[in-house]
Image 1: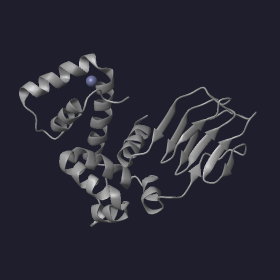
Image 2: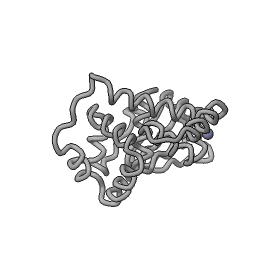
Image 3: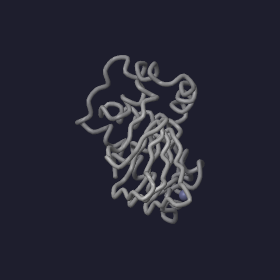
Length: 196
Ligand SMILES: [Zn+2]
């Protein structure tokens, strides 16, 4: 569900920030009539912003953004700043998620800790979660900060966050496979999971 072009993403943010010309507005909405990807992206984005503007939203504690910044891995800091400058509405959505006390808190304070779907049939070795040969897992698997190696079968979706997924020649996955390796993709992934 990725938008088809950055150009439209920028227009969506301009629109949501109330900074768009009449013509751009027309173009954007004309495009979204034809493009499901952009339409879906836009609806999630605008929902998250509507949420933020609702009365039930708590006020961010003092220094909140600063605290978040301090907890970010160094390489992401400058990128984060650029991003915020470019897309203030996304910052709002990101903060909203942070304030929901979601797993992001865990992510920023313990960036390297392996976590994965608890299933007694999964094995772990060298920061790699393994679906052993001959084993069938009948649920979705999420692996965070580690790799996933599939030698058996998975009846479900796979999500690997900050890691890689290896499918052995005998391995099989019936659902979707998604790798989330960029911090911002990760935020986006969280946004999507909340509104799913
Ligand atoms: Zn599109």
